[in-house]
Length: 559
Image 1 (cartoon, one colour):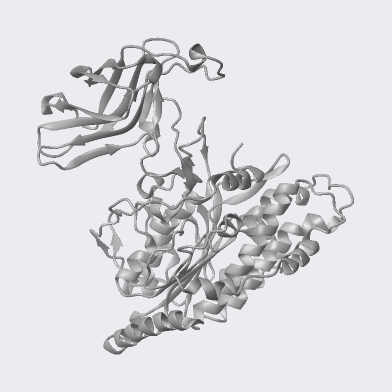
Image 2: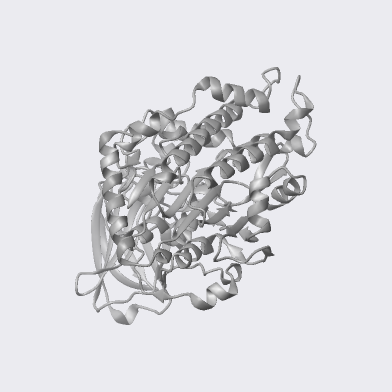
């Protein structure tokens, strides 16, 4: 370890030693969360029955486990959103215990602050748009504010604003972004929700102005809706990206300058922030959307220490503390090591089913090997606390190879062993779990979760509704399968295992059916009004969005 990182660790350990000397040792549990992207309960069951997952099998036979229902959401930046199971959205719900609308990770790619907007227009009638505002609370009177501009070819124009069918103002908007406002009387407002209409005087099509394939009718653009009360507090704030589905008529799909979802987009405190604030040390390796690396009470190896940062040559804010990045970089596997691993799974004689997806699979194997080595090196540096490590290779193997397991024709020159590539990746991850368990205190509680399952659809593997939830340790029941786990339940369950109060704002529940009844009787769940919202607007760092888009397209996440 470098000298500066060692100094940080010594300081953390000194605080922990003081805490242990002041309290009972039992109040300092160790909990490790293994995050297996795409691990499917049916595939796990079959491989357990065949004796191919010894470590996961032992955890399940001597612990509590359930299929875990995922969190379905619509990706806000898709032209035609459909309800689906999207990994960054689900992992954010697992980390926070709240729904996507609260945690803010709403797509793979999200806007840089201030760049999101939606065009307004109506191809089949007068230019108008309609949005649904929530119930408006606060001290009356209120002020409605909108940031918008007129479509340049139409020039400045008059607009009318209506709330619940009543006009609240007629204003002129120009061709540049500006904020316009109108008074809102309390008498106009309704409980539950309020309907805002924006009526423009004119619109135009880009194709009318010259050579263009854009045939949309455009009147103007909107980037923000706010309502301010009499005390100056903002009581409603809506942007056309995160609140896209409250824009019900006259809005085109939102546009923005995009970056991959990152820690700066998270609007609700993750589990490791809550635990760190109550004095528990934390060690995070590779979790989704943790770059830029924020300060934690321990260490954090961000999601860009892996393939995302490698492909984009990102070298800043990769870890906490920052100097840890140099030590982690020394653990990187060589390309030759990864090529040898790939050759075992997909021999070089095989014609690639998809060269790009096979290349992504190589990158993910490289990343997961780095995360495993990082966790193995770093987990023992903390005597107790919360530890988590994320592995992606099961998911990408499913997208790439699952159809071959289910009978699809093999590419030319491929041996039958390729049909077993998915199970070989499961076995590799199971071996990593076994190795990492040896680095943890013997009394550690162990949780294993996956964000979704995987099934074959046509020529690819696709996400399925249920992942897995496994809990093992002295606080949990032994050999107890159950039903009813949800991705939203992971964070409150872990908080309860640490003896911490569960925030009332969390949408998930403590999985009491997983706990040992005697332990639960002595440790009933507690709830408190603990704020979860992250205030402020830290600016996301820029990155190569084209590379991100290409990688996501190769495994079918975007078209």
